[in-house]
View (spheres, rainbow, N blue to C red):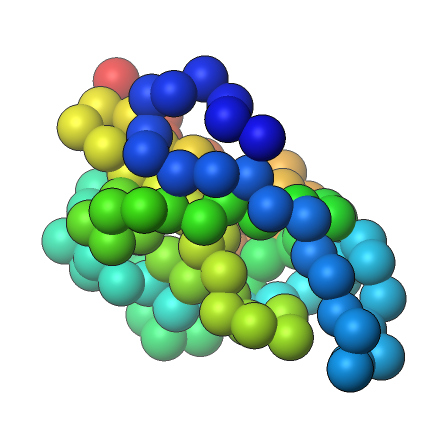
Length: 110
């Protein structure tokens, strides 16, 4: 699926033929922050965990747009960035202290 075209990426549905992983990906999972200097993830350590409910993920064609990755059968982009655009695959509002911190950081961007 092409999306809005703001980020050079495509939306891909999870498909696990050789693994017994459920779709949608639902529950807590960690995120490996790739760009620690990005203000969206200010004051995050290596223990960032978020709540996911999704059947699709974004595959960025430009690695510089990948802000964080998560593993669920494969490494996928769980947060994107391009100029002043930021996006996350998880639900910050359901992600306890990590989600609260991320929402605060997002509010501080404006």
